[in-house]
Picture 1 (cartoon, rainbow, N blue to C red):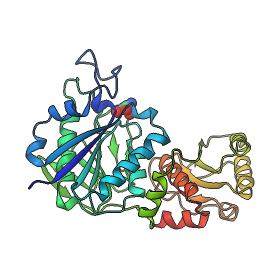
Picture 2: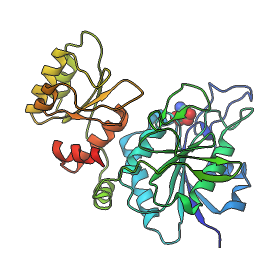
Picture 3: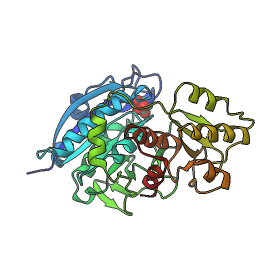
Picture 4: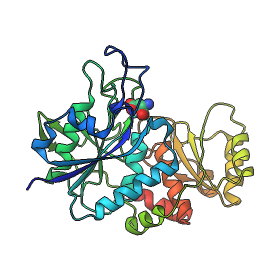
Length: 331
Ligand code: ASP
């Protein structure tokens, strides 16, 4: 019996439809259903027993916490289901890395979860979606993909959810892992892994995922983008509006202009969790100024601001302390 792979379709450009096959912008994302997506790639049937379900039909820039939690809920059910060997999610690329990271945080099984998407709509000349979907199924059905957490597969490359980011605005090779590179590839159908995954499951992933499944929303956490002459007024606005977490996308190694730092330090004193991340695409955020440590800011490590935001949202959902978040980031 072949591997039983469940496809969860979320929408995005992979399911996009344009009036003109030469167009790669100006299309309607999420217009094509999962049955049609699968019908375009009959080769998947030779790789695995696939079945599909439509979870959403959105342009992923519009994903909400409610939809993210619905995805967590469904993936949790499928991770626990005895009749499913692997999961493939088709997703818009704009927030693909966020969904991948969120699912990786609460991944608790050795079952592969693979997320894919496309940069060109399904109706385009040289659409990249069909091969990406076939490759994603190949990876999900491969025993070598077990126990590697959530994987992102596009453009023949395999990436860890924690490390990958959409680096380019329009290129088909947009997904890159700037610090360590791709961990594997699908070479003409053959799945190979060059490196181990950067696993990022939370220690209590099973119970945390269960807690999240009972929620309809996630706590509000903004990302404040650091820039010259930042006087920290948006920090104040966030705290005044009851925000309990802030990600500050600082400069370089998470540097924060003095006035904004003072506001963030005052926020921590009022019980707000602050993660110090970076607007730089490469490298990590580690210990910097002593004052940041004293203020209680948590350095984001290798997480980019959008992933750090999800980590904070999960932390706030389960009442985790800054010390617990620091520990999570060491995983
Ligand atoms: N805006 C689209 C989305 O994220 C882009 C894509 O899928 O590539 O749904």
